[in-house]
Length: 350
Image (cartoon, rainbow, N blue to C red; front, side, top):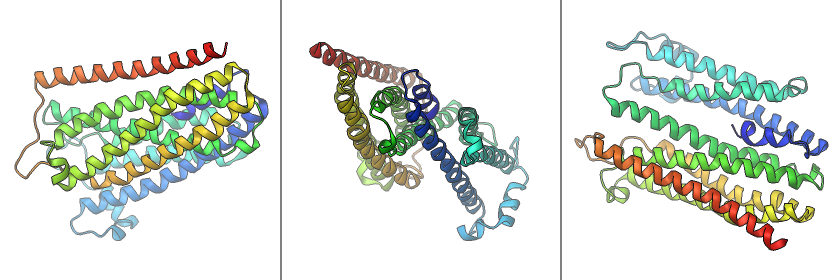
């Protein structure tokens, strides 16, 4: 997503230097190829974990055996299910292999000439991997269950686009020693475009996170009196740290980048976009890795046993709509304020 929405358009801009474009295309291709390898390995480990959970008392090491996996995938559908869970999992992993193969092909110099086509092919396949896994084998009991599935996927996709995008851009920024003096213009465009992607992801993460927190946490006190609540609290603080770092980029760095770009200050622009900006992004990446490390511990609920999850009513939907509209408005104000600061920097220079 980051390559399609931020990197590719910037590389295709007419002012981008030919050598800089070649360097970043090659590095982007290799980064995406390694992402394909990571996807394949993680997919196999995840499949084994599902096999271990499905069978009572099966150790994770035994679940890695192809025979165990075959038995899980070929198991018949449960009573009342419209399709076997193994069938859904089979389709998911076929798509995963196709996405991984598309990305891994970029290790080949010949395939790199078709970087755009392969990346844009892998994009919907990668998204389908998680969306297929969310298909329920039995019909959802109510509207709340449907919303649980939808918000969970929104949380997963937006969170991985946000954190994964930061990792990709940090990897690309590592090629700064091979870039020309005018590469700051190219990177200013990349950071600006990714800033919009990140804003959308932040809104989606916070919106879906509010829904899931309301479902799994009965009261504020459960955030520090239960294991689930403590992990959720730490995760929330890390996410807020990422948001704060992003706000620093929007309100402090981006206006200065705009000023340097307007003044044609090549050295300053290069320093801001390829030295100062990546340092802040590295901090975001570290926080993002911390969030991902906590996610596996968020199983179950903070609610006490026997306390069912709340059911959404018309008033809850109304409050949720107000919160979402407020969040959207605040993100729009953030974007406009960042642009206003950039224009003020330029006006002061003029």
